[in-house]
Amino acid sequence: MKHLADDRRQSAKQDEEGRAARLLAWLSAMALLFLLGIGAKSWFSGHGNHAVVLWCFAVLVALNILAFLKTRDPSQHKVGLLIVVSALFVYLFASGGENNTGPLWFYVFPPLLFYLTGLRVGTLMLLVCLLFATLVFQFPQLPFVTAEYSADFKVRFFATICFEAMFCFLLEYSRRKARNELLAQAMSHEQAARTDELTGLANRREMQQRLQLEYNRYQRSGHHFSVALIDLDWFKRINDDYGHDAGDAVLRQFAELLAQMVRQTDLAARWGGEEFLLLLPDTSLLQALTLSERLRQKVADNHFQFRGETLPVSISAGVSSITQSDSINHLLKQVDVQLYNAKAAGRNRIAPRVKSRLAPAIPGA
Ligand SMILES: Nc1nc2c(ncn2[C@@H]2O[C@H](COP(=O)(O)OP(=O)(O)OP(=O)(O)O)[C@@H](O)[C@H]2O)c(=O)[nH]1
Image (cartoon, rainbow, N blue to C red; front, side, top):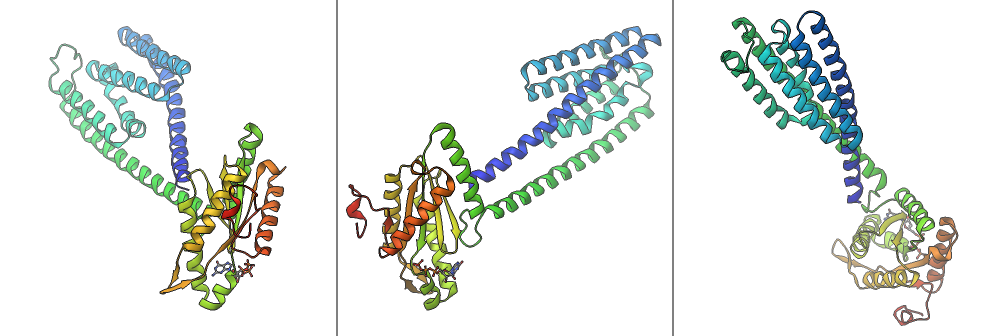
């Protein structure tokens, strides 16, 4: 059942990536519109050079969008957008934009960075940006710097941007923490809904779903499978003679044994009471009978213990393959009939009995 948790984690990660990809697409479109619009405004208010630079950035954003539409690679899209936006901020800082208001656009960066790149990379990128801003503020005579900011502006800019960055960091940290906790809770509820509480094996609901999936696979591509319905013999006597807790202990010990014996691709479930169902993908009837017989032998040889006492436990099982059935219901009816036959033939045995190499291994065969 571990692979189910991994699947769940994987699908949550994909959901989050899908959300980030949609946000990126939306941000790219907005960036394009803003750059075109503010470029036009600058053009008409006499800042021709600034307008042309903004339009160049708009072209870069558009090229990044086109590249994404071609490759459909969201991480490439993200890196492309972050590079263009970082370059835009460098330009806005160094040139001051219109009337030295360029750095004000930097306030949109911290929340975006933390959401898109995570806390560590986001913090690192922010520090690099702030280092660059310090450079521009402190050395206005540098060749690429054309803006000069007042001392008041510099102090207020740093104070507010640091406050915003810390605030965004905390918000993103809380968001991620809450998301991880929710995910863990959802996974544990999902796990509980699929698991039998007493034995830790899959429950009947989970088995029914897997049976349906396996049956669909069989119909689609002919991958056959077998099932074995296993029942603990005279289980009522164990409860009556040793108590209900002893019965529970036997069920748990048997479940452990069962889980050890099946492959990762097989599924063992508690079907109800003292009945267990084994789903064995890509397994023929003969292979399923061999496995069931090995299990029967193992149970017969095992010392089931409860409070220092050894309890007498044996199992009977009915086995059938999907190749002999025309539906899941029919298959389940068949194993039920076979289990009944095994019980009627004296218990501690597997049915059907086969007249093959396997036969001598089955008592009563
Ligand atoms: N301890 C315990 N007993 C359970 C549990 N679920 C079902 N049982 C008991 O299992 C017993 C099943 O008894 P029967 O159906 O008569 O079957 P049996 O005694 O195993 O006899 P055969 O199946 O004919 O060999 C009942 O006494 C149920 O109360 C459980 O979770 N824990």
